[in-house]
Image 1 (spheres, rainbow, N blue to C red):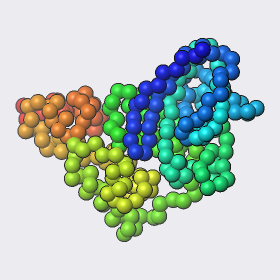
Image 2 (cartoon, rainbow, N blue to C red):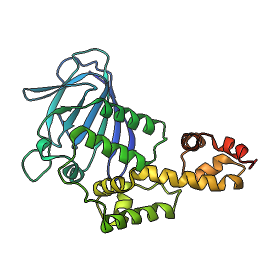
Image 3 (tube, helix red, strand yellow):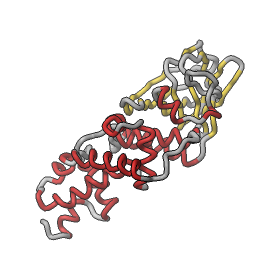
Image 4 (cartoon, rainbow, N blue to C red):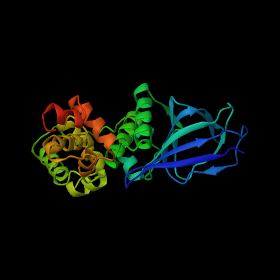
Length: 276
């Protein structure tokens, strides 16, 4: 019997991300299993097969597999070595907003109409970025959610509806989000919280903000924090404390983000500017 281990990497109102590792010892068809949630599964190591009736899908790193709530399936491991996957569990109302009709079952309740889709190299890189940033805890919830939604869009395509051309109303929406992020730089916002405060859906908010500002919300928040760090460098002897006060998860996260933006670590910038 194969043994499976699941690690929860992120859980918010919008998405739960699991890292699922299986040793692949069960080479024959497993007993029937039932999907408890609708999710997207991105294999990143090894291979397995999923069987729904007579329909078979090979799960490997160039594919995304779709699990619909209530689907009955079996798993087999025809190749030795086990496998590992990232699983994204999203509310069906969110998938209904993200997934184009060509990949959806007919009917009122959301469901994928196929077992799998091929993904490109950029989507594979997005899987790795999401996994590594969550495992290392360098991504806060807001960034993790944004990376997950970007991965879904990259994998299944976007719906035909697009945010309107930036105008007065969309600029006002973006401005509200900016003021919200600026009001508490250390807060670890989630997309649900920002969307609730601005009165739109999380998907719509991310699309509009990127369209108007040319960057995702989490990147904008990072720039605000780093700009504040520049202002406060002369006031702090303990740079770890400065990073934590600005909402960074650790000194290394603060230092690496600062260096990537400004070409020097905070300590190097202090010395360069004659602050120490």
